[in-house]
Amino acid sequence: MVMGQAASPGEGEENASVAELLTRDGFAQEFSGASRTLWCVAAAVLRDRSRADDVVQEAAIVGLRKLDEYTPGGSFVAWMSQIVRFVALNEGRKEQRRRTHGMDPETLASMTMSESTHSGGGAEGELDVQVQEAIDELPEAARVCLVLRTVREMSYADIAVSLGIPEGTAMSHVYRARKALREKLQNSLPDRDME
Amino acid sequence: MANEFADNQEQALNRYFDGQMTPEERAAFEEAARNDTDLARQIEMQGRVDDSLRSMFAPPDDLESRFVLPETPVIAHLPRTPSRMWVRLALAAVLALSAVGAWFTYRPGSSTRSPYEPLSLTEVFSVVEAKNWHPSTVCTSDEAFRSFAHKQIGREVLVVQTCTLSALGWEYGQWLLSEPTAVVLMRDGDEHVMVLMGELKGHNPPEIDATSDLRVYRRDLAPIVLYEISRLDEPHTLDAFYLPESE
Image (tube, rainbow over the protein chains, first blue to last red):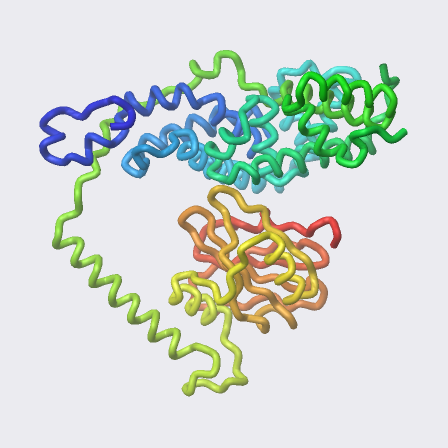
């Protein structure tokens, strides 16, 4: 029993494997603990925080429907991260199709930053825009790893478990992403006085 | 000015930002940065990038309250009845036999077919399915993938692999797009697709039989072109391909 939510005795007698499955309450408990990581995965895949809520919500519903596919003893966050990624990629594709019809670059830029917590004004706001552009150019896996490492401050081991990739790969993604971002931004940002 | 971290500055930067340095190393690193404007700028830049990342991707404080989980009953994983199992097994056996038959019928060099007559795209796809997506050549590393692509089409190509998306290996089909064409078998979760790669300039777009239900999706990645072939409603892997920096 993984999630501590026992099936009723009657069900247990009927089929022992039922007792090993995640219940709705068990799912809710696990989901609550993983939601911030899942949200970051969604935001990083989409490159857009404003739609991450919807993606995670939809992924939760998909996860609930597919409870019987969850492998007892496996990593809940890894399983849900896969679902979040699929839902986010589908959402991204739909958005891409919508964007190909009659939207100008200014509208697109404002959509991408639409719910940023940053005020967006001044030099720092400009930096955010440039960082956003540089992040958009990163491969998806690198972007997700970088966000989980920097924003969630997850260890490489935890990132690896969450995404189902080797720890070394997670580390390599972050290293390369950092370097790519610095190189990209060094060429595009004006020099600042160093302390 | 060179510093003691100059030989492996990139690694030192990552260790610094990952908090993996000892206090002594950290102090030495920061001291080195005071005497090395380039290193100082790298640290400054990375710090600003990290701040921006946190600003842009930090989950909202009230995140947990934003999700509503529907009250659905637990889905019981009941064992399949024996009769249904036998039907499925029989169906699988028939399909496997058909697949083997198709392979022997359409394989290159088959006696029923001229060895000089290449298979159509639909036929190649059928063969791949018949082989249950086991590629003729398996690549076990990025480097192997990259060099095989170079050998096939004269261009180095890489694919970003994730927990669900992976390149299974290579298949024959050098004639499908242009001379030469590389054929990659890809998996995205439970789905499989075939990707053709060739020179963008002067290639012949793939042709699908009118009766086929195969879908074709295209991505131009100059100087090469990619076509994803599948039965799926949208492309699954084209975005994952990229040309390494040395290209």
